[in-house]
Amino acid sequence: MSRRVPAVTVIGGGVIGLAIAWRLARRDVRVTLLERHTPGAGASGAAAGMLSPLKEAGEPGPFLDLGLRSLARYPEFVREIEACAEMEVGYRRDGRLDVAFGADAADGLRRQKELQETVGYTGRLLVPAELRRLEPGLAEDARLGLATEHDHQIDNERLVRALWLAAEREGVDIRSGAGAAGVETDGPGGPVTGVRLDSGEAAATETVVVAAGAWAGALDLPRPLPVRPVRGQIVVLRLVPPALQRVTWGPGCYLVPRADGRLLVGATVEEAGFVVATTAEATRRLLECAIRVVPALAGAEIQGFQVGLRPATPDGLPVIGADPATPGLHFATGHFRNGVLLAPETAELVAAEILDGQAPDPAFTPARFG
Ligand SMILES: Cc1cc2nc3c(=O)[nH]c(=O)nc-3n(C[C@H](O)[C@H](O)[C@H](O)COP(=O)(O)OP(=O)(O)OC[C@H]3O[C@@H](n4cnc5c(N)ncnc54)[C@H](O)[C@@H]3O)c2cc1C
Image (cartoon, rainbow, N blue to C red; front, top):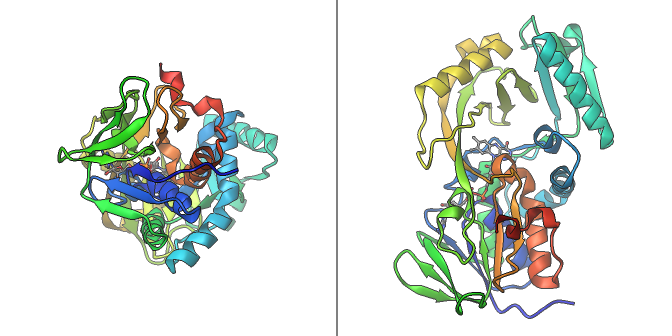
């Protein structure tokens, strides 16, 4: 049974806030989305767009389950978004290849294969000759490969543009340039009454979703969140003909081929506060790794750089769900390295909690932060 929801305000126009706003609007909710800059200006526009639940989770548990459920939602999510926005979002199901050069890394691939099998994924271990048949551009001393068909990728920049368009078409009021300073309540422990903007203005609302990514911890909230920024840098290359067909992980970098001929080489994981900058050292390390994996990339053109701040939490898990202490306050942040993957499932969970009263897995509750 649906509850009465007069209107929802979403703070943040990254892939998470946009997906939630769009999903709520599809269920006839009146949604306002506040975005300090423009949608996609944060991590969502800078990401690599890999959809790899097992690569990041490392072990069975609620986080892996969340990633697997979100990946399973992707085909339908893409179909709906592309139809609504009338544009393609570069969704590809070419799978992923991991490449090991040393004995330890090769053992790591065997362990990864075992973890994959626990969730019913099949992976193929490939000896050097098989590796180069699959990807002829790989370095000759690559020792072992692990190929899985289950991981997908999406062009995250196109996805953000499509979600923005689709959300507007569903009636979401997207306010670019409108930063939120904090959430107001009817006294301590009282329900949400509004959002205070950077301009000092107050906007009345009974339901707020905090989806401000790495900046969620900087908002003035009844429950401050320990979300911090973790910087990621990517170097964008181009080589004709393309160097690789599928997402490939090497020792210290990944390579993501896009349909338009770009090759993304990522990514650093740096504690650098809120400084969004491309550095010489990171560029050097990423390029060294890329050339180690595919030697022909030494001749590739550098097309540009991407840099963004991932929203990280102390326990590495996202924060998804209602604040039990403040009626009307919901969170959807802390997705760290997986926000693009987790957007469809996060949007479903938040909509189901606001509209149907179904709480997400308690592993993700904001209440775990006291
Ligand atoms: C280099 C790199 C590579 C990555 N690769 C992948 C990948 O391959 N796969 C994957 O799944 N994930 C990847 N990620 C992680 C992914 O990008 C993030 O988890 C995801 O984008 C988080 O989305 P978000 O909407 O929470 O945050 P963001 O995209 O950062 O959006 C937050 C938005 O909120 C706005 N905002 C902030 N404060 C306020 C305020 N007070 N008022 C109004 N608006 C505000 C910001 O301007 C921003 O637009 C990568 C990240 C990086 C940096």
